Image (cartoon, rainbow, N blue to C red; front, top):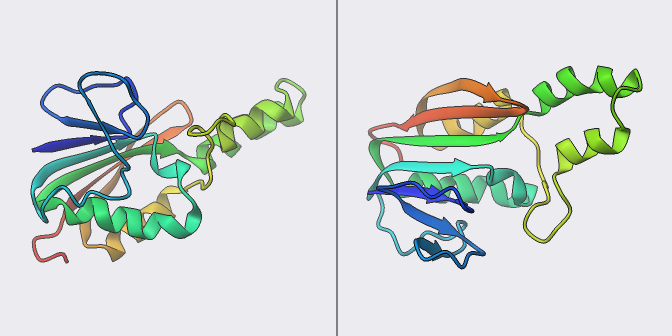
Length: 161
């Protein structure tokens, strides 16, 4: 089994697509902070695209622990989230030079300000890697970027909690 957490309208075939606010037929409505409907080690893949940044800082550790809990040993975790280093490196000089509104730079960091689309935490790869490592993930890689987002992949260690 595979999970696509915070799927929005990005439905993936072969995945259980979960989002907190959806009226799409193939989406299971639920809070990705609580995966208690799924057994420990029951998922071969957990995808979390553009979702982890929407939670409060003090929730991030528990959320990652929950996502990893449902992964089978050797299972894959895929996270895409804003990369604060890429955003600042690419866009701060443009804003400083007047080529971009400061408010646009702020929006890139904080997201749009509606109920579900506001960023509450930003990550650098090194920090996200540390959080994943502490929770039993291995082969943690910065697998690329898409615009100002980083893609991080990792595998669950065989003897992880």
